[in-house]
Image (cartoon, rainbow, N blue to C red; front, side):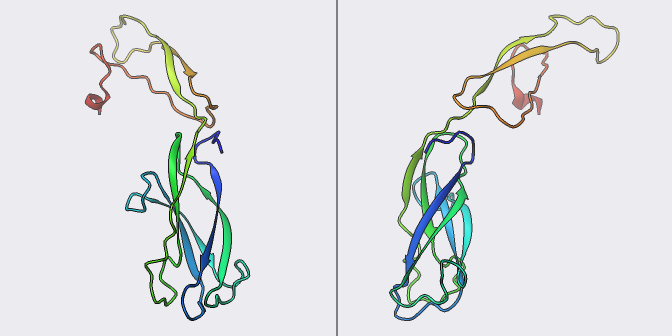
Length: 176
């Protein structure tokens, strides 16, 4: 898969097996996590919670030893090329009484997704070298150009900002 835009939609499919000795008789939610560092930790992002129960994948009760399989679409939170690890956690809200909860998280599924992203860069700026006016806040004409140096299209909208300074360098942190 190559992403042609930020935050692409991807389909994630998973299977869960009831490893207990009794049936899972209620409904529950599974969560899909996306990690950029390869582990499921506090920096992982919640990519969606999915209802599992009556009406989902033909499940009424999940007998001991039985499995269910589901597929859902998530938004992958990415703006650049990168490696992502996807995890699924069953029964995220602990709605099912289980003999053990330590096996409710899947192993990670690692993928590298190259992104065809835009890369906007200014290419020229034209402004008066000096402004002569006896009035405060004089109007001047400024022109600039921007090019897309990236491999993907720049879609949507954005704002360009023109900064004026009394010194010969741009130091935004001093302006705010």
